[in-house]
Image (cartoon, rainbow, N blue to C red):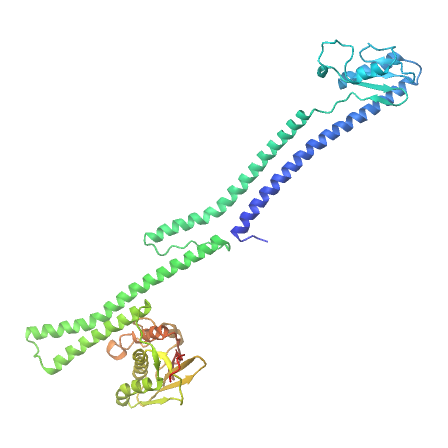
Length: 460
């Protein structure tokens, strides 16, 4: 199973280092101890074999020269003095030829056992050879073999420990180097992309597909970069749309004023009225842009209080009834009794309704129907504005709440508005803590639905 967590990989690396360290120490220490015991065992086996040869030669026709040659050869190999006695304690062979023919007394045995042989009284005891005493009856009275001194064993173990540390250090370096390359490669990619992003290149993406902490960081970076790029595109698009929307009324105003200045037209009421309409259009456009900007920044001030929703709906319907009558539209309401109060800004809710009703009237053919209905839910009230208009295509539904977007591209600013009405509706509904959605069928009409929270205040 692939380990995808950087935290787990670091823990695994340290665990492996510990395992390698302990394993190396165990292996080398075991080898040293096994070597010492094997050495002791080999010496014991050699002594038993030598004793068997001595007995074999001794029980054959007496051949002291062969026995002497055997022990001299063994002494030369083992660096140990060898003495052979018979069952009467008489020394029948000595690898140094000094004690042959003598009787092994207790004092002589102790002297040989303590390595104080007849080789010079001034010789340091530690430099004297050890003595092995074999009896022809199958006993080993003294074993001259001396195990390695403690200092030699410690030196050997220390060398093994140093070697184990070197091997462990090498393994740790390889593991750390491999893991650091694995970690630093995406980090370097993130650093490079962040620097390019700082320089204004918002198209930078790191495209790291790992599922560890670095992969999550890369995904967050890509999401942030994508959001910044989308925001920058929307900002530029908004500026372009604002410039486009302002150009027409400003051009009209400029044309009227130049004509008045040149005396081409007279300042008649119709001309003044046209100039006033263009000025009012600019005023509405700047007001709508200000509302959207404040709402998107979360700085739109709402005077929220418990309000009777039916009063606000009837006022909005009354305000647009004249436009509906001009197109011979039926403008109706469906308001149930005992509607709960909603926590909202009455002015802004009226703005939402007027924008939705204005759109419904604009896009509904003559003798059509426009209606407003309300349904109380558990914690909110649902308001629907329906029409029998031209409808909206499915591919356009996700776009209709964007700034300056018009579902009917054939409509002009004069017939289709400035394209900010639905964007304002969305922002105002969200500012109230509600949701807005739309259902539509081309040729059959549309239904815009938004919700407002029910007030928790109990009026007395």
